[in-house]
Image: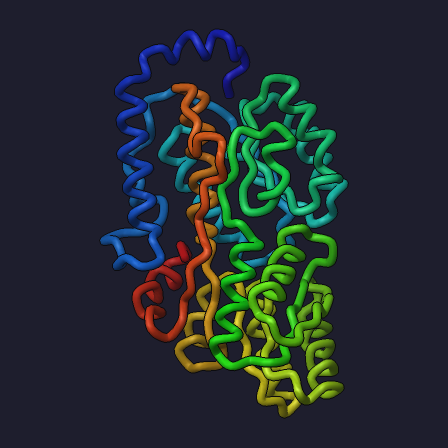
Length: 340
């Protein structure tokens, strides 16, 4: 780990070749992770080549990930691929509880990390500790959540999607599909990115829509809650979930309730591929979580070694794009490999 940031800065003046190599590596990753392109010859960390000839640094990645969530496995895998390429020691931690996540930020600062990548699902709880890290001279970027907050909090960049725009696209898709009465299932009440998705759906949809809060860490409870809602209101013809595991659970709810409602979702995992192929799930909005994790770490490496920033003061958008039965075959192998 680098213990003297001034000496590190001095030692990295020789960075023109590094910057060039980084630009090439970034372009390769952006191409490989495109949702519309074909599969690259290889995927995952092995595709990133050898370790960068730059000083060893330590970066903390701190998320609001619940245990065992396959979406966050993709983010972590992308971060690990970038860390392996960039000669970075990655310290990954997740905590659903917002005060606990804020404490992880402070713990990272106290341990002497060189940079931090963080999610801002509940920005008010994170604000004090994140701003304290920045005040102490640490470069900090946000990814996945906090689109509306990262700039005001003074972070260097953001990698993810504009959740409201993604929601509007989903709402417009529902309308085009002929839906009239929908529910938007929120698996973590109070998470700003999930609330923004549902608000965007309502804006783009124009039909009747209701938010349904569930406990995403208790899938049997999720199934029974959705099932009860469908039985209570048989006119519901569409369910939009905000995560792949919730979507697969909603499919079981529809079957148990004897409902004709369709299921669509945000985010993907390997199991969702078969559900889209079979028609159990109509479509998914992909925000490219592997890419989010990769770019968050790679951007900090670029800054530590060459003072590069990405985005020109604007968010770097990784989504949204639609995955449905017209393009699912193009990403099926990537999903099976755990990078999509």
